[in-house]
Image 1 (cartoon, rainbow, N blue to C red):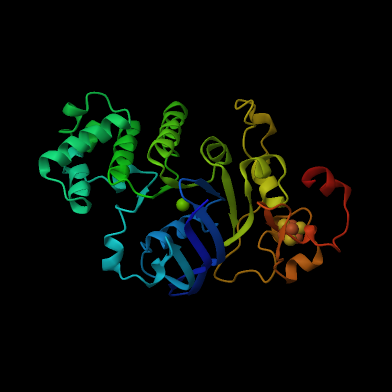
Image 2 (tube, helix red, strand yellow; image 1 turned 30 degrees about the vertical axis):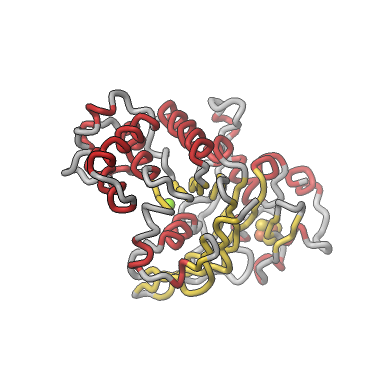
Length: 336
Ligand code: SF4
Ligand code: MG
């Protein structure tokens, strides 16, 4: 397996008038070519800031303050905005929750896809048009020859999301970052869009980073998962490990708060995690989850735990996995 992306000790802060908000506090992970990786967590966990850091699209006053983002071995952190322009939309594309943020209402869908194609590939207008029609067909938009001349408002929400995926993939990027791509859509359309992403990943061998608060979405598309909280990675593992052998109380909490995959209608069992995420203006000294964790010990409040590798592919940042941690029956039952 060849590495496409290596993130090393990434730290991103927002320098606001009330102080430095440490949104990402040292994040490391790898992404392999053609792989789909899920990043999950509640809002404010740092998952969107991670993707905006990779794209170098952080809004003022956001800034990468440390670390490396190696894309095919080249550090994006050191690239100028000008250099990034030839990478964004070309080698790395992004889709968002709301397609209207990426689609311009005053241009036709066709013009927008063609513009992206012409900008990054040396194609004539005519060939770009053909390619745009092909892409709309690939993403399952019916009669693309006609649809290509329509404006975004003439598309339904699901169709707009498909058009945005067509635009994002028209330059055959090596990496597609999808930030909550289906959150605004109803369940049926959501399933169709996820199916489409899976299909395109296999067809075009595009690596995907799928960012979502919904673990169920991740299980459908991804092979590996990163769980973020308080600007740190709490746990990382394969989909099987995260779903069936979670070793972090926060992951367990997320799992309990989603409908069981087998019976999505059984809302009875849902248990929300009580409390709210830490204030990253004053990040906690210890484990960021400690105030909400039912297993918290004294050391949890004072010191951030190191990662414990529980398998070759799974690591977890929790004091419970320390060799001297107390053995608690409840923990054994829930986490082991
Ligand atoms: Fe809970 Fe402590 Fe583990 Fe944090 S380190 S998740 S507070 S047990
Ligand atoms: Mg977000």
